[in-house]
Image (cartoon, rainbow, N blue to C red; front, side, top):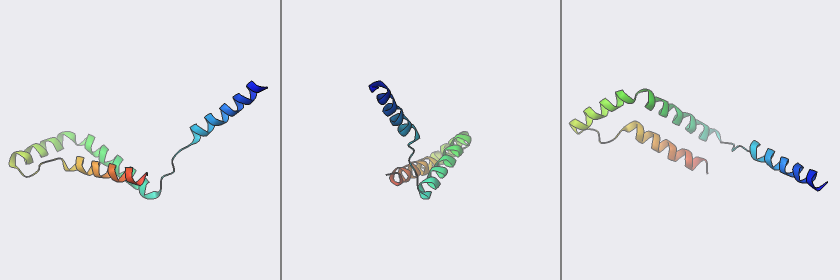
Length: 83
């Protein structure tokens, strides 16, 4: 009897833990979508961006990758939004 009761409670706790998902507000969802698009663009254009940044750095016009900076800013906004 006690084992059955304990297994039932354990099962309920397990179901509660696995079904728990954080509900994001629409602004957070948009930020998450934008971040995914930025990361996808970063991966697909890595060589083109690298050559562009290298050329700009040699001229002294750009000091850091603007796409990477935008990703960092978006990640920070998303972290703040999820709090």
